[in-house]
Length: 416
Image (tube, rainbow, N blue to C red; front, side, top):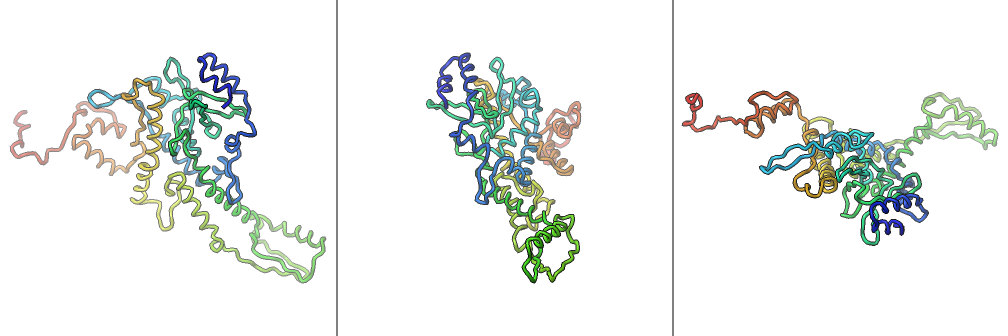
């Protein structure tokens, strides 16, 4: 961190703002290794550089990130207040509006959280620049996670460095909303792409090899043999002739051979080369890095179907072990950083997990019937789950009395 930033931390807010403007003009230097690595990625043992853009070209990476981001962003998010009797009530204030309706001038809440979760999946961190008015949150503007990183000065004070078009801007911690993914408790979460560089580099190399294999219609299916040494002119004529058989559009054409030339077929079996098996394993290996079951991205293991109760249990496990930890991270960071200090114990934000636990009509009917008949949920609450309007007299909790004592039978009719 530069001298300007260290001094700015000890200055009043008005002077500090001017110091940050000066610091913003500092450009990315050649000695800034982490900054350049974020731009150009890392090279795998397969010889392929792995960057965010390269990794997202892999269908498995794209699907893991997309499915997780879309599933979480589609869940309703609300702010609640704990009441003295143990119940809770929803809060409709500016913070709730920012989190669940309009986080900034350009985005809806769904678009904002979809982007934030996508960054969290690929980078292990997501950042937003926050604007406060009167000590209350006013907006959240997303920051590119691959261009943002936390840094500390010699006193241990936390700042955030943002690379913007070759320039470096430093923001204080109270201007940045930072959600960290899985890690070892430091200032940053761990990136699946950075640590999975070998897996994704191998997958990129395999995809490129497969593409080159099929770019030639002959697919290295054989060799031409001549009984004599060809001149340079004859070699050029042969190359020109072979051009007419390149690409898949010209596959299976009949080739006419002259001057004693013969064609010897070669076999290149994908199973023998393990190309198909390698690519199947890569999908499952990439899913491990992102904590997404292969079935979620449309990849069924050998012998596994895409339907049935087993798949349903896999999806429930994904919600519990994959999505729920991410949701809790976001909720706890909102409570810690966006709630006023004096209200953190009584207010909290929560995603509605029921939005992803959709059931068939029969299972849903049995589920709601059990809750209503056991006095856990009122009839009106059950109707709300079905998007039906409330009815008079439906707020009272009821329960089945099939096992009531014999002395109680008929008491209700007698009282009437």
